[in-house]
Image 1 (cartoon, rainbow, N blue to C red):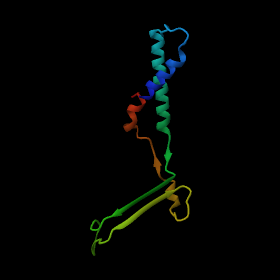
Image 2 (image 1 turned 90 degrees about the vertical axis):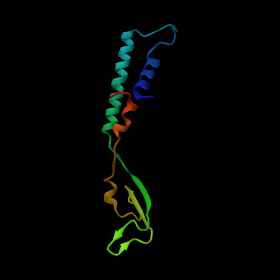
Image 3 (image 1 turned 90 degrees about the horizontal axis):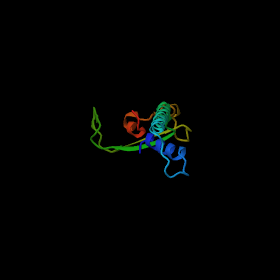
Image 4 (image 1 turned 120 degrees about the vertical axis):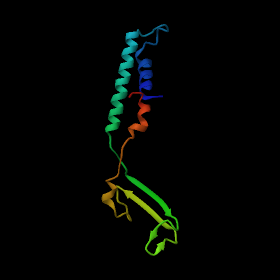
Length: 119
């Protein structure tokens, strides 16, 4: 369910009286709820798009297989283990602390566009 649809459902359930079973919003009232839910969804989407997410702790391990690195002496013959650690708190053993605060993660608005329900 897109954000706009969820907002519209929440508004409809909480702004209409529940005592009268036959109560229905007028077409004008329904249109106003539709516009309000779209504006709220856009406001939330725009707010999230402006946020900056920062990586606080990250660890990645991989192995470079034999024969994949070419040097003047020839290809590597042994596997090479590579580890990357980034931490904002700079725990013991992590000496590259300045790089910890350079990692930034942002919301991918192209991938998440359909989740808001607004264009």
